[in-house]
Amino acid sequence: MNDIIKTINNRKSLRKFSEKEIKIEEEKAIIQSALRAPTAGNLMLYSMIVIKNKEILKKLSVSCDNQPFIASAKMAIIFLSDYQRLCDYFEMSNVKEYRDNNNLSYDYPELSDLLLGTEDAITAVQNTVIAAESIDIGSCYFGDIIENYEFHRNY
Image: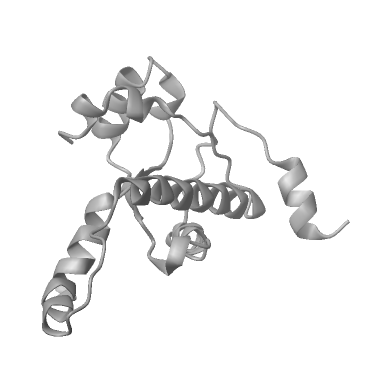
């Protein structure tokens, strides 16, 4: 069995983290691994929010179903489908003007693009946890962000 398959098979969700600090090179490698995940149409329809602030991690531990392990994490990365990214891309690229000047039609980003962004985010998350595991940094998914998005969006 190769090292990648071993890493995938050894990965587990942790709810108690080491006190060991995450080195900046390790953090960069983890984030770079997320960015290398395949995306729909290479549009990368997701965003990542890296959180290392202890106060915010503490608030997340309460707002995400009172899961104290979140407060003890050295960092958390929130992945979200980012429909606005595609809308901004179309606007910055002057797609509407190009269409009008060249007598073309186009569909503005559609709701289905939101689902593509969700797929992109999930794929990036998986790359992230495998990268972290490969350098002996534990991880745990927590999906409670979506349940309280009205509260979380204010951070």
